[in-house]
Image (cartoon, rainbow, N blue to C red):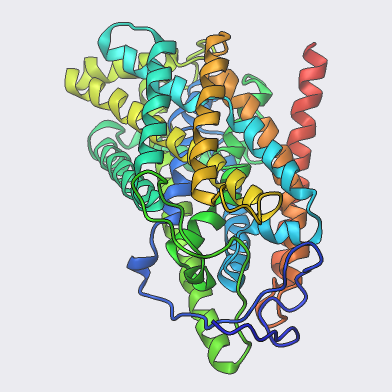
Length: 478
């Protein structure tokens, strides 16, 4: 790899290097066919397909009908632009977006570790999955099942030879199961009445926050429709491990037990700006946007709409139940009465698998973000603490913290999801602004456009407004 520095003509251009070493140059690899790029969008959708798709939007629908589904479109749309701007930096430099943030100020490192660990320490997805497992069994210890699930997640992530490949395969399986059930629901369960009611209900409710649903649940649905918070930041890590753009020059995370660590470091590599390389970059940019639109935006939106329509079909718009998963249990019972025992069990099993795999992604992203930050900053020169070893250590630390939270009695799924959503809303305000600043510093021919800057500003203001609104409602309730 050449070490020649081409500051004015490199893709990194004006990216700060005061806190980290400047980037050497290397060749930008050619973009492969779209089918070989698919992966990171599926993984990030996996979190939304556990919380927003299966729990939050269907719960809101069971309370107030279909009038809040507009929020899923808005939330997914904003996150599509967030994701692609995060990816812009990684395919241009080969380093994660958090490394880019730390180039201007190393203090962003510990702050983002805190903003990742605190919201996602709550094992909301696993407790939801555990509760659903008890439905077909007729009961069970939710805390014990949750702890067992967390330990299994830790084993999967730390024993996989190449962690990303295992994660991608499992999430592909999950998406296939969810889409299979969604297709079955469209064909056999929902009927035409909910579809007919959807357009007018969406128009009627657009821009409104229903008064009959707790504010934190509404904000959770907007934030977790697709990912939310540090989940979006982690797409940079997954894109790097997938080998997108200049990420092909970065090492992948492996198991320190079963894998062979790859040489390399956590800082990036820029490419020389020429007419040929710009043409290659444009092909990458087109391909990754298409991957995100199809696997993240469309897949998640279809699932949110279908599962919400199913809730509307079975429970109506005046369920009035408590803020827990009793509505999922009731929905399954009604499906079983109408279509048979196996439909009820399948509905619950799909939910349990979906939420377990969502928690798998959550633990992985905390491990990736934390280990990447530490290896780039305080442990940069360490010969003992490689990124793979740090990743495994953080994974088990997060699982231990989750078990401690469960042991303390915090095991209500919607409560935990609401806490995570509000904290993640705050995180999104911060990094929406930082993204614009960082991507403006790339070479002008690949930097963020003015139109996208306006959308990012809108995202920043929207997440700030929702976070402040939620906190104000909490203060008023107290």
